[in-house]
Image (tube, rainbow, N blue to C red; front, side, top):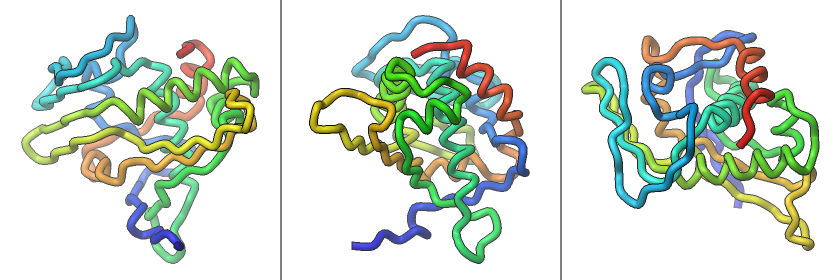
Length: 192
């Protein structure tokens, strides 16, 4: 069965040479700089402004932010025919491709860090509300094609579907630009 690209798409309007970051990500503790915790219940996340944020599951880290931004950058490069700014939200690559895109070497250790981060991004649920927009869910869905050995390799194929409901966080005036070189530097400085 052929998939409908339009159903798996978002409008992303940033310019080449940058990556769009929702203000709520930059102005809250969604992506933390310190220890990781797990929670079966929603807990409140500190935020500036009118944001009301709750998170359930694993605490997301700066490394998870870097992985997410790399995915958004890869997504931005996938135009849907004849529609300016409409981007395909399915990213197909290998763990090594994603590690390299983040500025890391294609090693088994880096592939392991990436898959751990993708697991957190797929299993952590967020509720974000600011009076104008509402988002609820995980940031991505993940499919992994493990080799017969079951080992995580740089050649392990992954298919990531970025949650199209994030569109509400990418409406004009609700996001800012970040230089992808800064994101890559963060990716090299933090480990999963």
